[in-house]
Amino acid sequence: MSRILTIGEPMALFVAEQEGLLDDAERFSRFIAGAEVNFSIGMARLGHQVTYVTQLGLDPFGRNIHKFLQKNKIDTTFVSYEPAFVTGMQWKQKVKSGDPEVFSARKNSAASHMDKKLIKKIKWADYDHLHLTGIPPALSESCRELVFQMMKEAKENGLQVSFDPNLRPGLWPDKQEMAQVINELASQADIIFPGVAEGRQLTGKTNVLDIAAYYHEAGVPIVVLKLGAEGAFTSRMDGTQFYTEGFPVKEVVDTVGAGDGFAVGVVSGLLEGLELPDSIARGAAIGALAVMSPGDNDGLPNREELSLFMKREPIG
Image (cartoon, rainbow, N blue to C red; front, top):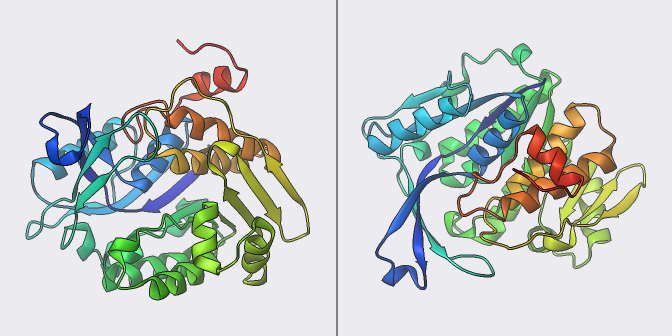
């Protein structure tokens, strides 16, 4: 199995137990949130070795996240504590359909104070793949410098790099700066996973062919545009292009984390030597499994569950 490195901000997540506005919710169930956490757990459940870089507050939520990562067999060698700041938190609405309202309390969090010192001891020869998202560079200037440094060192050391924009406009000063930074990072990756709406926002293009062409011209070899329930559109720089259908689901419980599950499927497939179309199909399957659970990552499958789902057989 492959050795993967990622960086992000894990947060304590509280999901409302009753439907309705977050304003009126009285009871919540507790989970762990974070795009890179979801990716790490998904990869680990498929048997890959994942190392997670982050900084937590020295508080009950930070300690719980640390234990949670270890319980899920994620390497926490580069997880540190910053006692002067707190761990980020999120609250999420319960809905029957559509995307839930999510409220975050992450400004000035422990993770937002990460800097390049965190990666000084990384031995790049110990890893095969780096997975990045557009969230850490939005947290602070020091986080942004850290992410660009990781991208630089990974490329210099021959690692394969995947990048998911994971746009969070509320964390950026303005949309222009967001697009500039995200596109600069994307241009250095080997494979990127923008949602189609994100691609339109980042490039100003309206259709999948033009969005893919924009990133190929920037130097990205593989562009995978997520189309939600409809599946995905994939384009290679050599001109190969194809659509992949989405997997039908019995009930959409929560859409958050589906894109991270999709990235898990594609990256794991490629690292295991699957052809690109088969890797994309795996991504679509894991994305579908992710939307059928209330937490951001509790629906991510192990190998047996994934195999059964892709064969359209009952799980459990």
